[in-house]
Amino acid sequence: MFADCSTSRRGFVARIGEGAALAGLAAGLTGAMPAAAHAAMAQGSVRPFRIAVPAAEIAAMKRRIAETRWADPQPVSDDSQGVRRQTLQPLMQYWAGAYDWRKVEARLNALPMFMTEIDGLDIHFIHVRSRHENAMPMILTHGWPGSVLEFLNVIAPLTDPTAHGGRAEDAFHLVIPSIPGFGFSARPTEPGWGSDRIGRAWSALMLRLGYDRYVSQGGDCGSVISQRMALQKVPGLLGIHLNMPAVVPADVARTLAAGDPAPASLSPRERAAFDQLEAFYRDNAAYAAMMNTRPQTIGYSLVDSPVGMAAWMYEKIAQWTLSDGQPERVLGRDAILDDISLYWLTATGASAARIYWEDHSNNFNARGVIDLPVAVSVFPGEIFRAPRTWAERCYTNLFYFNEATGGGHFAAWEQPTLFAQEVRAAFRSLR
Image (tube, rainbow, N blue to C red; front, side, top):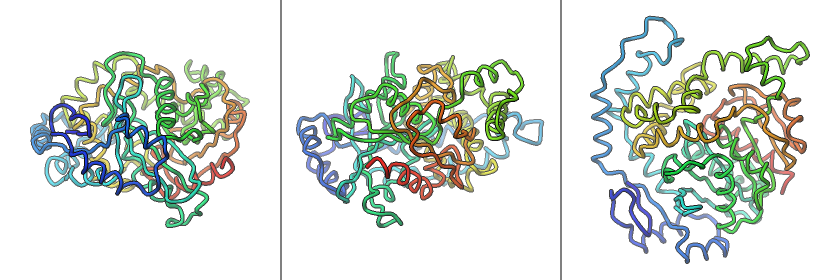
């Protein structure tokens, strides 16, 4: 299924010819590579990478979808029991039929992709350098049930801002890794790969690529990882940008956990955030409780049934996009299935869920005080809209805070232009 210059993974494809791989690498990069990155390539620690899913694997996926034994239609007229069959079944019929994985595979293979071993684990990443002088290095981290695909439409506006309404001085060099256990990165075979360790691995990756000063951006799991990087003050990190900040104060978190009424002292914006979280915990958090405590149990279904896995993930994509429960209107049917197919074809449903077990924490609650520079963009369709007052309590160097006009939890995926504008504006003062 995957290949790099040194080995093939899972025995699905033969080794890529070294000359062809390096030629593809040279064609994909838009700027000169740092000397340290050249040295890393020469030492074999960073290997060019391509995707080549065998046709038999795609055919098997489609066959399993077509052979699904469907649950009875829900006896209610809304989604209060979960994804309705009349919503999911047509999407699955398209997935089993006309959907074409090769399109997104080709799109990924057109990018400079690599594999490198960090702390005993192979890490997959996209690395696109800007042609603009003095571009800022930035690592972008996806979440669950997302992937590196969330960022495909922001690569061009961030690396080449002058072609997308920005200024040359707003350019970034981008590193976009797959979290361990997700997508093309290796699946950990031992416990301990939580967000703290991943944050240290990201720092090692950036330094290996020759970036000794860089910034980190993330939402969802990527937000947690970015914040853990800041809390640990990993080498080279200048600051972070978050589109899902963990800022709920301890007293408010205790009240929510106990199911008690909202404190009377909350401001109107704080009360609105409290109400959003209360509704989320009451109606929509069962998936997290399962993955926090029993990822292996749900994992069997996530790697055995494509429709079961799709329903598990589609529900959250529908709820967390600013789409009135119809994410196809915002992301497009194929983009949703690209992401779901990535999980299926890499058999990472269980391993991706384990990051919840590893962290075993609430990703909305404040965790320590961060004194490195922090920027926050709040998108209106987020699970909860973080008030600035809460952010100021746990980020002592909050240098940027803005409420965006569109988008939801998957900000880069939903609103790439707006996301790029936010990231440019956020990091402008750190350059």
